[in-house]
Length: 247
Image (cartoon, rainbow, N blue to C red; front, top):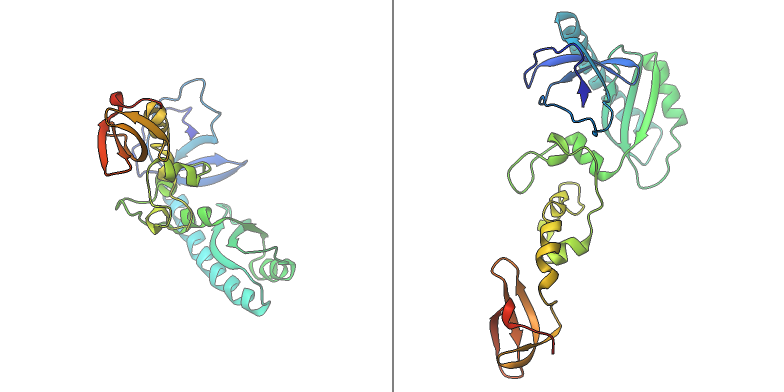
């Protein structure tokens, strides 16, 4: 987030000039809120609302980014580099171009950087990113029908594990667990704490339990209805959690 020391009246979608990493950038207001004192420090400050001069420069930078993107693609082929170009960002003042790419292994792009620096007369940075960052850059919509969380609000990527999917009774072979990045969906972590808390007093699948009908093996649990499905030597039955005990 960015501090608003001047108390400017801003609305979501409005363009503003901010101080970011000791340089000026143009950003879009997403929302405004009061920051508690225990929150981490701001990334920078909002200097002013964007005017015609900033908008014209922003448009010029977008054209420069597009030109740099296609030029870099051509040079990647010329140098026969095993990398995939994702995006290009121009610093607001035009002094630097950052090229984002993915690659399976280390890439020697020194020749590429020299050619780009000669072509665009400025500082060139090549930044390798992961597939989750690539999805954030490219954008898209999840299976829920909404824009990707990493594009709209999610700033930090947390580790997502198969254990989370298993605890939520999701199929281990289903592609529905995968996001556009090809990794496990970030939303698996949103309900992980709920599943862990709710499942604490429920038997695990595969465990032997005592029921009103005798001992049996748990083959399914329903945490929402607090039901336990138990298989016996002959047949199976469903019980309330309160009816189950250790053998």
